Amino acid sequence: MLVTSHNLFLHCNTKLKKNKDLCYNLLYKIFLKRIIIERIGRIILDRYTEDGNFIIEKQKDFILSQTLECGQCFHFVKLDEEDYLISAKSRILHIAQKENRTIFYNTDEQTFDKVWKHYFDLERDYGKIKSILIEKDDRLTTAIEAMSGVRILNQDFFETLISFIISQNQQIVRIKQIVAAISSRYGRKGEGIDYFPGATEILAAGEQGMKDCKAGFRAKYIIDACEKYAAGELDEKKLLAADYDEAVEILKSVKGIGSKVANCIALFSLDKRNAFPVDVWIKRIMEAMYFHKETPVTEIEKFGKEKYGELSGYAQQYLFYYGKTLNIGK
Image 1 (cartoon, rainbow, N blue to C red):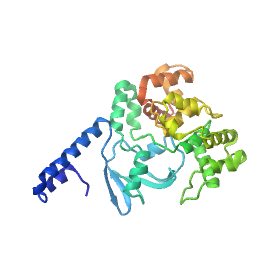
Image 2: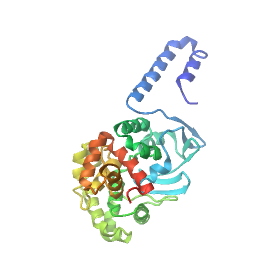
Image 3: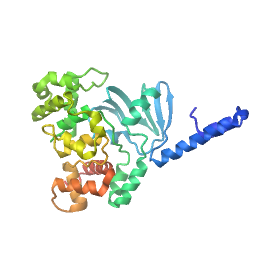
Image 4: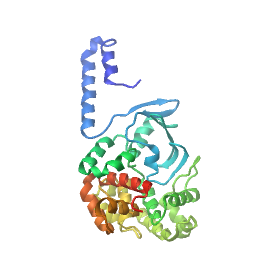
């Protein structure tokens, strides 16, 4: 049974009449924790285990397809509508949404709390984020309402680093194919989807190995990134602790990584939610919505970060998926 303040109150008045002080103290702690959670913009999940699966119900602002297919990750297999296999965090997850339930198959509570709750950013209150963004600029309303189920994933740094190097001048379908090929050739085998290899495996494969996976000119950039990662020059803990500007500059030290790719890596794996990656789709939609003329990428990036501030990354995701879906500005 889900422990709630109501359940505990009933328990206090039936089974534990002699220990009411203890019960009321517990009630106070529950209400205090709820107030703290609400104050910092986090939400409480309705969650339970059933038949070996972990389930959350009535999760607001989370649509699996929008979150996975908005261009922030590339290592998944779609099984059916709102039904996916994901390779992430050195694990394979079968996840689906049915009616008002999100089902984490063959997952226990401990693994959900340790891995997937953070990966899908499920405790963050996206309702508040969307309200603040719309207050900043009501022109975002249509994009936010249309793509209201997008959440920013907290992905593995190394896989995100390599994936977005691969993403340069590529369509999402092609990026997924290359990521899958690298995983199939050099990663551990999984059921239905393979694991992404580490830097050691990619370095052993070499530049030619990456070219064999159709990485093309990006192969040499992948190897350079792996060499710097293996040497400790791209330390995930240090990058997480660094501020946005420092993290982006370190990432740009890798051959082939420019501002857009560095911003994507910072946003999707280093918790830099003030990053504002500008690709062709963001450029088009920002020109259509704000500039009404051809505008340099650097100017758009600066404008986005100044306009949306600490929530720039969220605004970027709503705009990107909305603009790409509707071919805005094309």
